[in-house]
Amino acid sequence: MPGPKDLDPSSSPRALLGAELRHAREKKGLSQANLGELLFVSGSFIGQLEAGTRRMLLEYAVKIDETLGTNGFFRRNCMASTNSKYAHHFTQAVEAEELASSIRQFTPTLLPGLLQTPGYAEALFRAYWPTEPDARIDELVAMRMARTRLLDDPTTPLLWAVLDEAALRRPVGGTAVMAQALQHVANLAQRRRIIMQVLPFSAGAIGSQVSGIKLMYFPDAPPLSYVEGIDVGRLMDDPATVARHELTFDLIRASALSPQDSLALLGSVAEDWTHDATQP
Picture (cartoon, rainbow, N blue to C red):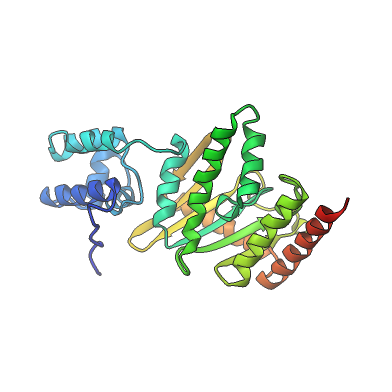
């Protein structure tokens, strides 16, 4: 079996900490599972820290220093790299998203962030924070659009998105905004940049109607699952939990329309929004 991929420590704080953690662990003669037992976490969690797919939180940095005798190195460097422009509960998910080779996502009622247009994102942020000044809303929209640039790469990450039919028909931002948003998704699907399916209303009850699911896969680390609610989010690596979420996603996409039929439905709804937008 090939060894773990070497990270470039200069590429990010996470890469630096991951490379140093691997070095310190191996110097002590410990496997990832051994170190995980000492820290009361899984071996896969240690692997994700070393691969840079997880941000090292201060509580773990302190324990690592104590366990590996690294004289506060991880605590100091962890504290120096904790600043993030994203909300605390979302930071680790965004960082993992940037490293993923494949993402599978289902979001009920709304278009997922990676597929949103500026107008759609602005309407959502204004609905969620109705009293925020324009400058703050503009900042939030810019941050979301920066995330969508992941799809500028022609092949990676592979994004498989299942959209609820409600997301196509809910009027976020008005008719013109919806027409543009759905056409953007259609363009991505037509040029085969994403795999897109629509879960129709006729599918009935499904396994994840309350919260969405995002599964992220990496070339040299175990997969992660992310679920979120209002101002809360949880990134999970427990194999049993990830497997359960994978099954849920598989059941959802099995109940969805085929990619071809999904594109036809999305195009039809986009035409309806466009027609409504041109009416006096």
